[in-house]
Length: 207
Length: 207
Image 1 (tube, each protein chain N blue to C red):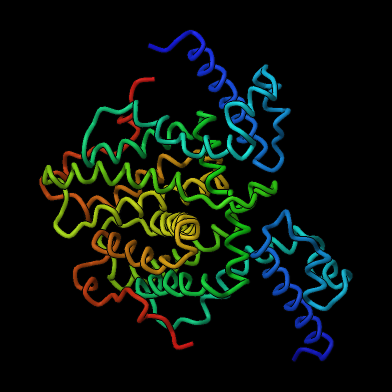
Image 2: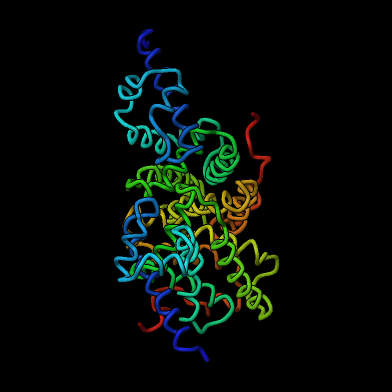
């Protein structure tokens, strides 16, 4: 059972993370300042450095927090789970600052001298694990390489998001994700499963 | 017929563009300086400002130069042309500074306050025109939306490139592009054409 002190520390950490997410999402990494972040959080610089070590440590924590903002919202399994992850992700990219900051920092990291594929590899491992469940349930066509498919979906979502953001401020991101599944499912889903997989905003959990 | 003066101007413009590409590719937009660029080009600041107006003007010219570094190398048509564009692109991303800088600037532009989907839309329009040829030659399955497919391919290539760069310094970019076509072609190519479309580095034109 966590002590009152540990609970307090977790809450402080979360406040810093949320304030940092908002500032990074609005300003980008270079223009964001740690002073701005702690002011928004109503905390001290000491709290930021205690929990994250540096501005870069904060950015890494946000990049790697992406799956934890999506996965707990889902109950489906196998191929439907993979589809649902991308739909919930597309929906939450419109309004979840922690997710938006994580994605922005991961895709723009080259511009501020970082070079860390961890957040991409974590998505890939997670997606691959759901595809392995799909495989053992007979949901996949023969010959589908689950790891390469997961790698492709992570890359495709990354790029769709950038293009959608520039072209429509992400208004069409959900539509683009649905297009991806319309294109991929006939190649990867077994005949019997293909008609049972649902793609579209109706898959989103109640808010 | 261009005059000697116009030819000289075109050569100067190209020298600035190439030097800028190298500097942006190495340092990113923020850290690149116009002084560094003209020094590398062996020219004056006046030449840079005359041809491009500003550092941002240079960045825009590079972002929008992408298709011109790929298209002249190809002779195929229709769906094979679309595949070939992506294969040549994956290959040249390893060593063409103008292309690398253009892609880097387009994907990281959010971090330096730019917001310009032009280079993405130009790729999409170009790819869509080849898909329309494919459609009129009976190469596509019924129900394929050529514009949405083009939009998806542009987004997917954008993200594959970022992930591949972070994970393997683009060593596996060609493999990832081939994976994309293995996944997409069964959904989009008509039965008769599917076995005639070639995917792989053997499609690259002789250097």
